[in-house]
Image 1 (cartoon, protein in one colour):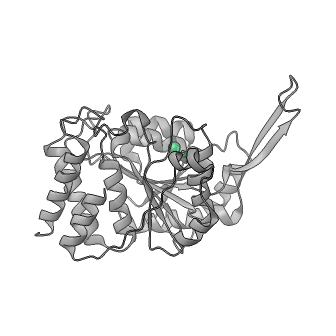
Image 2 (cartoon, protein in one colour):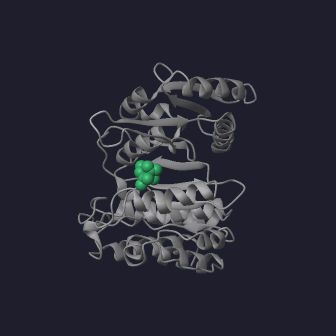
Length: 336
Ligand code: IPM
Ligand code: MG
């Protein structure tokens, strides 16, 4: 990803300054800390943050996720998690009769509340009478700012101009009652946008059966987590799925949405497209539309003309070779 970004930046006449932070499993095992507050303070000062995937086979699940990823999202108030689902040309999908025309939507996932807020607790911990609760926190302000972003994005995309609220109003009758009321109230301000509602389970079904029904989907944190893994699969796999954690008024952070896949560490076999596509989203967010478009051209050309598969070890190329190819086509499209 750095290679492509640097090549495109040079060809597009952009000047990036990079600062690296040693965060993650290795550091945690060495020092016992995940993310010092001083680092967060420094990160506030950057134009954007690029996060490599985190995870380590020797670290208990939850420590790095909560200590680094979720902590960054929450403290930097990156209240939107933006995750495009795009079928690149030439890519095989389980939905074989659907093509790039039919699979092109984006999920706006609320990113700081819901079940992720950490509300709940244990009663009679580790006894036969144990009770564990985990509550979904939905604030009107938090829901409204997420919906606002989604309506504005739907307008800006200017495609089907359709915004679907994905919820579970039939069961989660408090949380999604709030979401639905807020959604309907805001829809009045956007007469140009068609609004729609789907339960989360039906959303999953239609994402596979009729993905062309979707333009923008807005949903809460937990459902957004789940449906974007499905989204990653219908666009060909985790190897191409990128996302952005957006604070429209602060520092945003971009990442491949899959995990770190430790079994492939150092093998030079994983697909770097997801990481590169996250850099493309970052360029777009920074207002560098031309450079972003060049990266997109690079990705599309490489998946259409070179990769035999999007899966690790089956691409027909090494990770570094894929990066080289994307960089080459991206730069060429800029006339470099
Ligand atoms: C994601 C991941 C994270 C989440 C985990 C690693 C905490 O699944 O970015 O979708 O649940 O948000
Ligand atoms: Mg997830």
